[in-house]
Length: 548
Image (cartoon, rainbow, N blue to C red):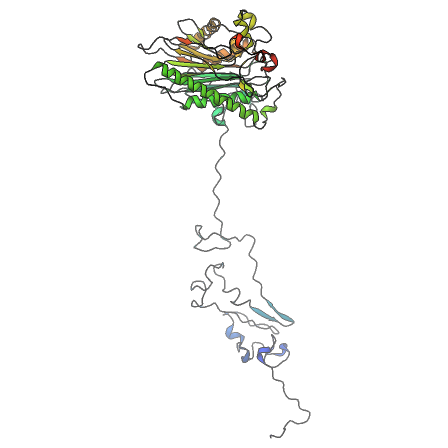
């Protein structure tokens, strides 16, 4: 046993495990401030001198400061590093910065003489710094902070506002706000007056207000345009005008046209007149006209080739199908949601569901079939022969005429425009009464609402009006120009109803064509006075047209 050599009063020195040393302790426990600057216990793994590890040109630490050993970038063979920058692949590091901002495995620590060690916080990028997509030009395959962002493509310019008809007060144009840029007048409702030609200047064969808004805005035909809206290849031989008139607030009439150029000539004309005392009549009439035209323009059945009666039957079937489609369109309006147009105050009490009259003509070569329901009419006005009325009104006045009452007396009665057949929910029958016409001479096929024939009911009377107006338009007046003048004439007579005129110019047929004859004007079932049920002749059960 070794003797104890410790002298009395001597204290055995304490040994400190370097693994348990606090930051700032070097070797033995003591005041860090007493340590020699730049020295450290080799047992803790630090450098023996600060100058050996300091960056070239750096200042030695001041007295009392604890040196922080800088970390070297990882070598390229370290996983996750790149030889070029020393940064892990996919990281966002500013070019030229010292790697790493933080050592792998955790942040770098710096000892503070009077506090515990705290992590170094990287400087926050300036607000202007932003990342650039690596796929963008100049991105060099990585995100770069502070680089200019790729500018977004400029939005396309807004489409120009389509210019419609000029202001009727001063001839100026309407602005985007709906007011004339010269006199300040409000743009009129396009439903109150519109004009159509077919084929039109764009080669479109179908013309109705249901076309897109831009086309509607440019569909107006200038009053002095001789053959406006035509092309050399397909001149517009069909045209029409629909107008509100003078006394009415809204326009319940409707017009839809279709025509093809070339030979044989093919066309379809539809005119509907909404019942003013029925709700939603403006929309119902236009929906009916468009639906009917859709059938007439898309069907080309001509029956057995070379058989005239087969063609007549095929055209009549087209009219039946067109009328069925028109009725469905009226029912859709009846049961559909209300629109702003429906809330327009017309000054007339609405007593029934939507309803309208119907007259249409389908032309194929030298044959035409005209069908009607209600009191809208069709006329044939040959250039050198007597005019013909092609339809029979479904009205109270027509029944009186059949009983022997003079036409001028019957049509002047208060109930003259009470119709006995119509298109609508409670219509007794909507099969059109048809007339077949074979053209043997040039002339005008005219369809119209009662807003025109109110002032010229007899075929001879309306023929005189056309003969007075047509010569003022030149040798070959365009149909739309003649229709416009007829509407103006009706307004000059008082314009107490909506006015619609549709015209087709029929040129001379080939020399070997058969004679043009109105083959028949068959009365529909139940139209004879002795066959009309009593409930159909009473005023409350029929839409009242006399209040329009």
